Length: 583
Image (cartoon, rainbow, N blue to C red):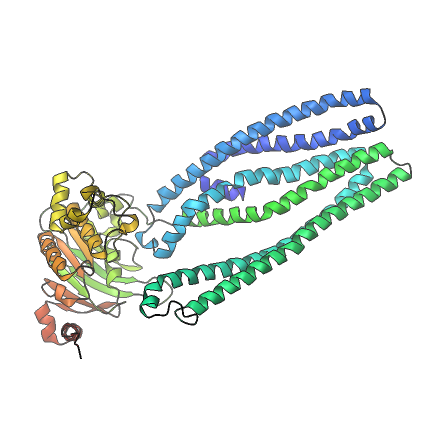
């Protein structure tokens, strides 16, 4: 585990770790030596030779001083090392995560990363202190055994014979505990999920008068999950007790065996009673660390699991950066986008895009339509290089996106997706993310064009109002307008809009479309929208189906062709005629 941890914290921490391990080793050995020196001291005391016992106090005192110095140094180094490892892990994770493909950050991985950066890093660094426990549990008994071997090989052998028995019992106890712990963890996770589900369904349940119905709205499933968790917790406690009792029983039986051997040797005159008592004291200290190791096993497994999760993230390969990145031409008229024979999928299933070819002209508005799941959002993600294509190429201005640096690509493409995420800052700070060096006047102008100024006027602190984590203090439409203002401020040659106006009411949607019309002037705009009325005026419309472009042209041309687009438009027109009536 230490080797694995060294790999994730980096080679710079190798020397501090070796110094810490040296201090820990000196302390563990000195502890064993101190216990070993107790035998002649106690023997002398029990036989009335106080002067001899006094002389034995000198090496014992020296050993204790050395152990105290090593323990102090070990404690200081443990604190410094755990702090350095925590800082190193945060730095390495931060540097690596920002280089990972943007497509890697789905909802599940984002939640895992959040837990990893919190409890995961802290748990991983606890292995520093566990190393002290494990080293002491090995070296101290070994040192004691060497002294026992020197004093009386028969008692030493009796102690050594008990070790495999104790370890076997602890192994059985660990297996019993592992099984019940796994069952309880699974039951607790299920109960937590059911509880969150039930809490989230409260508006629907109360609206239908089912909040108190034990059989409806998931209440029965929640009760069943809670009952299962209670049974699993009870089994965990009852399952752990035999293991704990077996471990203690094994240690007691091992000590009893040593006691019997010592008594037999003393009664037969092989060993003096005083020496037998002293050796039995030494035997107790030999067996004591095994109980400490048994108690540290759970913490050890937890630390190792956290380290392995961190290692898995650090081993996730980032998108390769070109050795000699190319630069895109800058000027009026935007940049063209070419999707040439692209094949891409998210897993072993059939690819989402299959030899897709599409040209998005520079300085024009191109709309991409199709059924849900056709791969429209995937196209935008490949243009922004959230992923690398499996086959084919995506080119901007005639240059493959894989030949562009990440910074160059991000300075060229702006994205506004349906799911908008804002940082827990002020309205102004979230808009300024588009261009941190923008002046206040430029920020205000972008906000005005995206109709963010009415939002600011209603907020108590105006531009300094915080939007909450993820923008939760704003409505969905307000978050969209802030994101569009940020895009307007960034002012890139290519803009990708994925359902960017889906959360806006009719009045604000019209205002935002006016702002987007200004943004589209002289720029390349790719628009994805389910509501076809928002893209009817596009310069070019492409219909995506079965992973390929089924048809393309202007709105009028596609209607006249009577194909897929015409069918989608017909459904759209019928939906517009729906009305709620009173009977």
